[in-house]
Structures are given as structure tokens and as C-alpha cells.
Length: 328
Ligand SMILES: Nc1ncnc2c1ncn2[C@@H]1O[C@H](COP(=O)(O)OP(=O)(O)O)[C@@H](O)[C@H]1O
Ligand SMILES: [Mg+2]
Image (cartoon, rainbow, N blue to C red; front, side, top):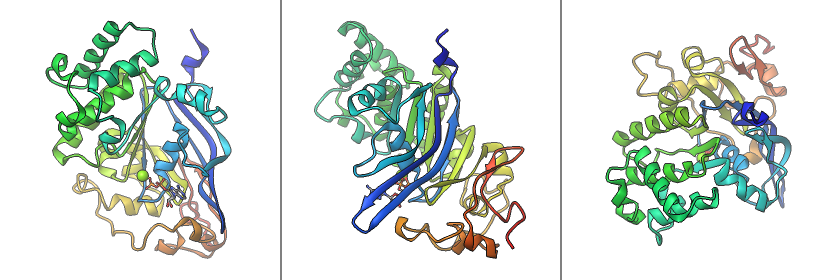
């Protein structure tokens, strides 16, 4: 067996991303570390601006210049990818990692039929004949639950509803048989009634194909229903990580507890907590000490001075002086 097949779908170690600007360096991600096993869904959650998409884009090698990885390593399916050039990374995308974004139309070309796009992607990543690739394309469309796939394959993106279009994007993401899928707010643009269908589909495909999924969302409810583990991000850092069961039942970071107050679906099970006042700091205005300190109701002197790091617990890890009993 190929030794790489034992490695996790994704391993990110100490990843930092910076944006040089005329007024100095902005640090968008600091020391982000996470692992996604094959067949596992890691939810990445946090308010807008937390660095969720940035993390996904860094893994995909799609950071917008001048943004760049300035520290750390990224390994996809055991292969180090953060040091690859654009051509090499292009081949990794699609073959090893698939992407699903909020708006399906960003991933689909309106000028080509779904089949043309599927067949091209399949052939780019395998040596299938055209006919074979088409048959596989139909198979993929069936797999993602598109009725009448034999005919629908020749339709154009605009001929599909939003939910069906996102299914097509998932089929495209699967076309190269990737070990990892980055799904960035994949259901945010969809009707609430369709959201659950898409997340259920993602979950099933992830299990069946043994692919790891990074599911980026601002919605704790989606995490509760879909993910196995969850990483909570704030101001470019992971501030808590653990199993969904554990983090949702016993959130340890005050920010995680605040986010829990915003799960409508779990409202009945989880004690309702007050909403968090204030907002995520801009990158050029991250306060010293704990970045969450201006919004934290239990803030102590140490939180204003020192930056808490993630400390491993029996279950998961949390970066908070209050939790660790040392705010003085
Ligand atoms: N091209 C860019 N240049 C500078 N800063 C950026 C750029 N793109 C995003 N940012 C900043 O990086 C931070 C994280 O953004 P992002 O990862 O998109 O957040 P989200 O968690 O909402 O997905 C935000 O403060 C955002 O303003
Ligand atoms: Mg985002």
C-alpha cells in the first residue's frame, strides 16, 4: 500500500498568512494548526472576518497576492503543498483537493454545458476516453442526486435551480477523486429547505469516498448537524478545537459560548446564552493580549497583556486564560 494513503487528508501546521501593505504588515492567519482525517468533516466556524475563507484559500493555494504563507506547512494526503509553484499546485487542485464555494456560479462556466465541464475535469485528472469520461460524468451526477442525469448532463448551468447547481459543483469537485474537499459556505446562498439536503449529501459522499472535508461556515447549526470536529476561529487564530459533541455540549472559550447563543436549531437543547456584543477586530486593530478581550465578560488583567495559546485538554484544545484559571 502507498504510505501516503495512511496520512490524513489534510495536515496544517503552524500556518501564518500575511499581507504586506504600505502601512505595514497585516497578519491574517497566525499559527493555525489542524488535521482532517479521511472520511472526516472538520467544521471551521467563526464570525465574518475570522479567517475561515483565508484558511481554505491558503490550503487551495489560492491566496490573493500579495497575501502569502509566511510560516508553517500544509500537507494534503501526505504531500507537502505549500512550497509548490503555480503549475504544480494547479495539478494538486482537482486531483487531490476539490473546492465548493458559496455561489455555484463561481465554479461553473455559463458558456459550457455541465457535461463539457465534467468531462474536461475528469479527463484532466485521468486517462479516460471521452466516452468513458462522459459515462463517469453521468455516474457522478447520479451520485449527487440529479434526476435524469443522462439528459441533464447536456444542460447548461442556468438551466439548473440553485440547489441542483450546487449538486453539479459537488460532482465537479468529486471528478478528480480528491482526498480533500474545501467547502466554503456551500449552503449559505441556498434555500433553508435545500441546505440540509446539500450538507447530508456532502456528509454521505465524504464517508463513501473517504475524503476529508473542511466545512467553512458561520453557522453553528450546520456544524452541529454535519461536522465530526469543529475548529472555532477568531481574528485569524483557532481559539478552540474539539469534537462537535464535546464543544457544543461544553464550550470552553467565552467566544464559543457566545456563538452557541446563535444556534436556532439547537435552541431547545442548549441553554440560551447572551449574544456577543461588539464585532471582530480589523486586521490592523487586533488588540494586544487576547484578541477577544474587548468583548469578553470575564476578562482579567492577564488577558490584556499576553496572548493565550491553544492548550490541549483531555478532549480538544482551548486558548483562554480564564478557562485555565490564570487571569490575574
Ligand atoms: N485580499 C485581502 N487583503 C487584505 N486583507 C484581506 C484580504 N482578504 C481578506 N482579508 C482580511 O482577512 C481577514 C479574514 O478574512 P476571511 O478569511 O475572508 O474571513 P471569513 O472568516 O469571514 O471567511 C479579514 O479581516 C479580511 O478583511
Ligand atoms: Mg468567508
